Length: 272
Image (cartoon, rainbow, N blue to C red; front, side, top):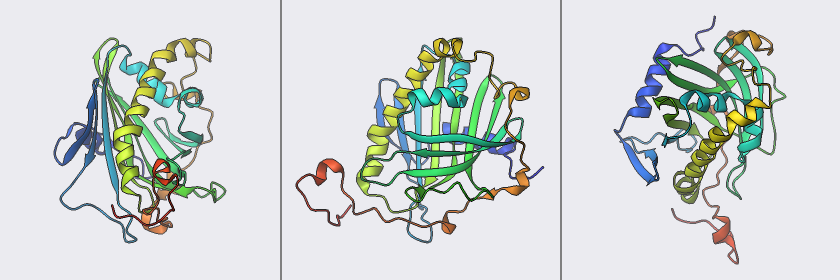
C-alpha cells in the first residue's frame, strides 16, 4: 500500500490546526459562527506569485448530531440538492476502506474563472469525533480536464466534527489551497466575510433536512460507514502522486473588479 494514504499523524495534525488560535485572524463572528484567515509571519507564495490561501470556519450546531453532519458531507447524491456552488462531482475509485479519489468543480464569484480539483479523500471516526481530509493528486486518466476551468490545488482541506450532545456538535471546516493565480483582494475578503458564512449556513440547513431526505433515498446505503457497500473500482494508491502547484498554470486575475464595482466602469488594474 502506497504511503500517499494519510496516516494517524495527518488526522491528528489536521485536528490541531482546527483547534489552534496562533496566527489566525478573525474575519467573521456572528450567530455562533466564526471565520478566520491565517496570517503567518512568512506568507507562502509559489514560484509564480500565487498565494497559498488558508481559511478556517467554525459553527456551533445545536439541532443536528455529529453523525448526521458526517453523513451529509459524504453523501454525494444529497450534495447535489443543497450545494449551490458545486458544478460537478464524482468519485473515481476507492483506495482503501476509508479513502478514495474523486473529482470536484465549483463556481467562483463572477467574473473569476471557476475552479476544479482532483483529490484523494480519507476519513476517520475516533472517540466519537469525525475527520475528513483531502489533498490534490495527479490521476493517470488525463480525460479529467476541462479547458474552461482553472485546476486549483488543495494542499490540505477537510472537516472536523466534535459532538456536544446527542443532537448537537461543533463543526469545523479548514482549507489550505492554491487557487492557481493572483486573486483580487475583494475575492479573498468576500470568501471570508460572505461566501464562507453562507456555505456554513447551507451545510447546517442540509444537516437539518438530511434525515427526512435519506429516509426516501436508499436509507441503508452508506458506503462511508459500510465499506462492503462500496462498488467503486479499486485502485492502487501507488498510481497516484501529490499534485504540486508549480506544475500547473497560473491565471492572473488580480486586476479583476467585483461585478458590482464594474458596472459603468472600465476594467482596469487596481491597487489592492
